[in-house]
Length: 339
Ligand code: PAP
Image 1 (tube, protein in one colour):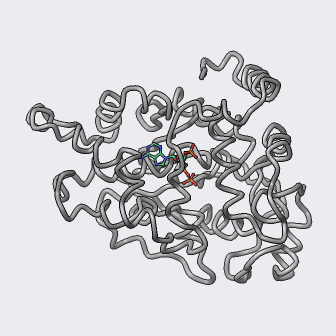
Image 2: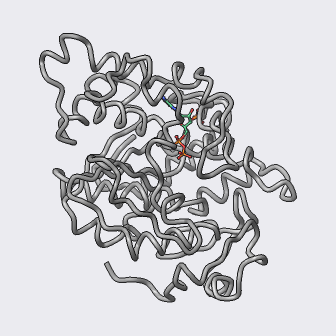
């Protein structure tokens, strides 16, 4: 995949930046000023790079990850558009691949005391986002599981070339949008005031949101899953909600962690679903009160709002819904992908 110009400054030359881009050091500031810019959802601006929009504080991690991340063939990478069910997917995959060490009904299961995001870190947002420091991933027990919101075009070549497994979870654009709008208003820089639904809708439709355009993100991984079905598993949030038993078993097969008949008989899959279901996770103390350990600004409870399919009907007008349908039809036409 060609690396689009202009290139990013090296991670060591990027300093800690707290908020808006006018506090950034010269070189990242210069880099950003060379990129298309539009209104942001949490910070004042988003910048377009390799065809996708990102917050200014995303770039250090994006670049360091592209340059340095070396996957192992046994790695598992969970990829999502923001608000597509990342937290749920992390919980399910963690519970599946660690079920021998931590049976899902055990009283000391890590998911009872840690938010799923702290058990499966984001590559670009967390691990590779530290100033002047690259993570040492060598001591992480196999299988290493990471996550990312990176669009396919920006995924490190090392990932594209490896045999590691990729799970892509997507969610219908209307619920994703509504979830994102709620979430961003919780984290939004105070000086910016509330982001109005109509304003957010216009940005989202134009593709201007973190890791957007939403449709291009989804489509590129859909295509990757068609081209490399043994490497990329494409899952829909709605299907997972409708038939979690079937889809979790399928996911476990794909990852090479199939459930045995004996496990099915003693209801291990059911126990995993119970442990990871929205109601259970949302009510745990850690998820009601804590903050993410590596991204401290974010309260854990912000990741558990409604957990439903179709919540968008409470927010979108019929015109907004039609507009989403039109864009979805136009973007996905001929791809075989439907919601
Ligand atoms: P992220 O991309 O910022 O990590 P992500 O977890 O993808 O966020 O999205 C959160 C959404 O998943 C929320 O949707 P909502 O706003 O429509 O409610 C959240 O409620 C939902 N969610 C979190 N955990 C679960 C779960 N266990 N089952 C189903 N949905 C869940």
